[in-house]
Image (tube, rainbow, N blue to C red; front, side, top):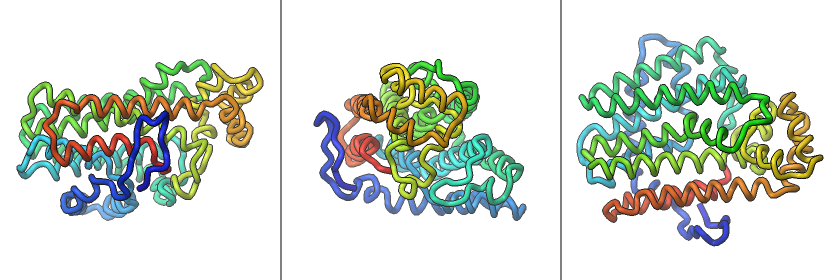
Length: 336
C-alpha cells in the first residue's frame, strides 16, 4: 500500500507493506482457525450462511486491533486469538443485520447473504453469531470484558436505530452524524482495542488510551467510507457508488454541501436525500465536488486519525505500537 495521499502534509506513509500485516501474519491464521472452529453448528443452513459471509474476507481490522492492543502490552496468554475471533463475529452479525435493514444486494463485490439466502436466514444467523460471540467471551472468565462487550453491542444497536431515524432527514447536524458513526461503527473499534487491553491486565490509563485510539480510528475509518461513496470505484470498494444516497442517508459530504454549498447545490442534495433519489447521483456528486465537501470530510478523517495516534503516545514503544500508529495513518489514505 503506497503513500499517494497526504492532507496538508500532516501524514506521510512510505512503506509498501503494512507493518500490521507482516507482524500478525501467523496470529491472523490462528484467528481464522478459531473462526472456522467456532462457526460449527449442527444446523446446515447456519454453517452455509456464516461460512459464506466470513469467507468473503474483508480487512479484519477489528480483530487486528484486539491483537495489536494485547501485544502492545506484551500479553502472551491463550485468550487473545479467541477474543479477536469474537470481535469478528460481532462485526459479521452487524453486517448481516445491516444488509437486511438497508436492503443491500452487494458487499465486498459479492451478493449479500440476504440476497442469496433471504432476509429471515440472514437475521437468524446474525443472532447465532452474536450469541456464539458471547459464549466465546465467557471462556476468558473476565467480567470486565463481558461488561465492555455488553455495553458495546447495546450502543451499536442504538446507533443503528439513530441512523434509521436520520434517513431522509436533511436537518441532521454534523454533531448528530458523528454520534451515529461513533455509536454504529467506532464503538466496535473501541471495544476491540479495549478487550485486548483488558486481557493484558492493562492499567486504567493504558486501557483508556487504547479505547480512545479505537474510537478515533473507527471515526476516521467511517468518514473515509462515506467519502468513498462519492469518490471511490465501485469494483474496488465492493459496493455500488451512491448506495448511501439511494437509501437517503445524510453523510458528512452531503451535510457539508447543504450547509456550505451554493443554494443550487444545497437544493439538489436536499431533494436527493428527502426522496432517496439515487438516480440523481451524478448531480449530487457535482454539487459535492463544487464546494470542497470531500476535501473537508477527508480533513476531518485525518484529524480523527491524528487523535488516535496521540491517544497512544504514552504506551511503551514496540512493533505493535508502531503498527497501531501506521494503521491510523493508512486508514485515511485507502481507496477501499
